[in-house]
Length: 238
Ligand code: ADP
Ligand code: MG
Image 1 (cartoon, rainbow, N blue to C red):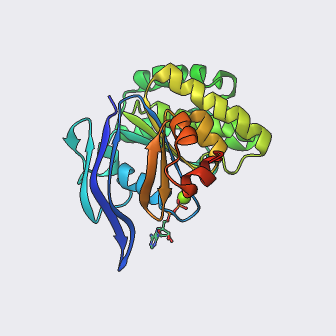
Image 2: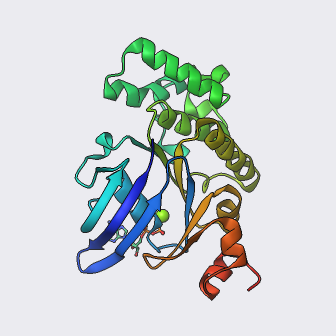
């Protein structure tokens, strides 16, 4: 299960409101992309959903339960950080095991989940290596593996590929889409890259200065952009 509903969610830092009250409904199993220019509030919105920031107003529901006051660890959401967030002194296996250790998952269950994640991500041969001995793409897969083993209701990605080179980005994009098909788990993916949004999303949320400019499938936004901002961002001919 991974339905996420935002109801009048608002965020201010001091006197500055970066997210005016906003409503959004994310269905279970959807691949949703938040797209918009730098500084429009994508990361803030994702961090509010993850519980890494407190809302200034409104409510967040996860699978029908009010999660607004829950700490991140209780939300059953897994944030995938960029690959440089791996622990360099730990093996891949230990990096992947770490969140389960913290959560008190029994050892045999840890092993089962690590093996399943390694298989899904083609990492089985690299489990005893350290991050420094891996390529950028492999490191990114380890970062995803660390999220998978928590068996979350949804995965949250914040520009996970932005520090990879262009060729690798294309490959990882396909891998993440494949993973979404395999797991059928809700994914929320933040990017400022239109191509990523158009190729990966079931549903695109176009953000501008903290508010939602338009929500729709890639085809809907391409064919019926509501305004020039959306058209310009999506690359539609309007
Ligand atoms: P994006 O991820 O789309 O680039 P952010 O969510 O990082 O945008 O930022 C949205 C706005 O909120 C920006 O103007 C940014 O400066 C501001 N902001 C983000 N985090 C903080 C913070 N902790 N304190 C003050 N302002 C912040
Ligand atoms: Mg950001």
